[in-house]
Length: 190
Image (tube, rainbow, N blue to C red; front, side):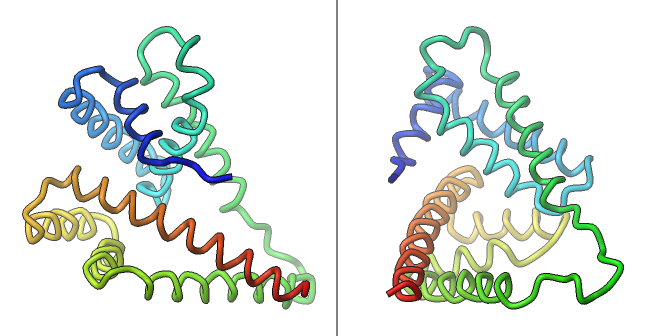
């Protein structure tokens, strides 16, 4: 099932506020608040969790927009809480008492296939988009924030516009990786 991310994102912004400029401001405020919340909870991938929160809201939005009453923020915060709980469930892995209890090849080969598809899909990006996405994820913590501001300044665009551009690039990569994995699975079965 293919998702129209541009249409979903535009619907999401219009749900935040009918005025596009105010919607962009509200989006940025929510984004920053959620990053702070996830950071305060010790998440190593706060921005990714914020993106996942917005993605989940955008997927559900067509179903709820007609019946949801009130401001969007509480719904978004509740979704963020679910994303955080999912993150905790995936992040916590018990250490086996015996190292032979560790899962072996199947997981490694699946991860290897994902990385191979990622490498292939990144190579298919335009040189500018490839450089942007690779440099966007270079640093950690405050250095990451400063680095991303520098990237936006070098591109002569607003930080929010750069995030939107990265959002679109990530969706392109996601679709490419899904197709690559499906081809790989078909090759394994056939």
